[in-house]
Image (cartoon, rainbow, N blue to C red; front, side, top):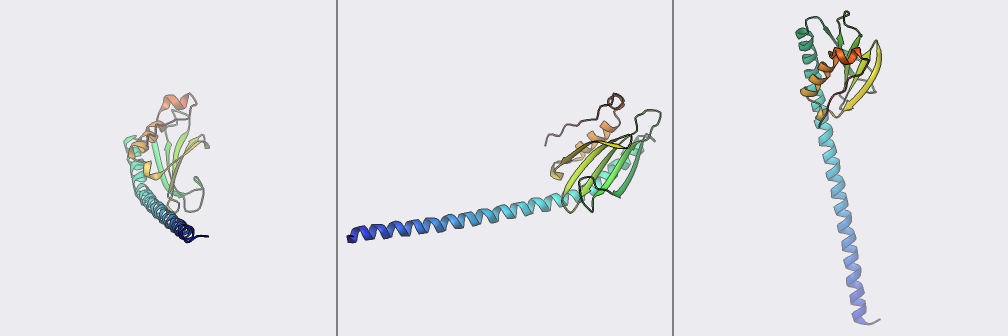
Length: 167
């Protein structure tokens, strides 16, 4: 092998080794960036869940007072909606027995997992369950849920309410 071919081979080999090392460094940096980003999102979710743990019972209590006896708020309680231990649930029930059906809304918050779920209750049976990233759950959605609970026309027709979530 000529000296020029050996030098060319050596240069190519060094270049390939350097490229492999740079690719590995880039991959490690990307993995670290993703891990940091996920940790930040998890922290933001847990923080938002903590905020919602205060806002939801306040809004449920406010709705019950405004509804002048038609709604009843209870909570917090422990529940398994959303799966897991340390799930805190807040319930808002339709309390006007003259306007059936019996129905309710349960919102469960899991501070450890940073999750929020809600379930509709019709005559003591769960009839619909929904989950949303806590970062996308705001008071406008909570208000939609409360208004859907009191939507007599829809419930009387036996239809489970739906809400618009545009996050």
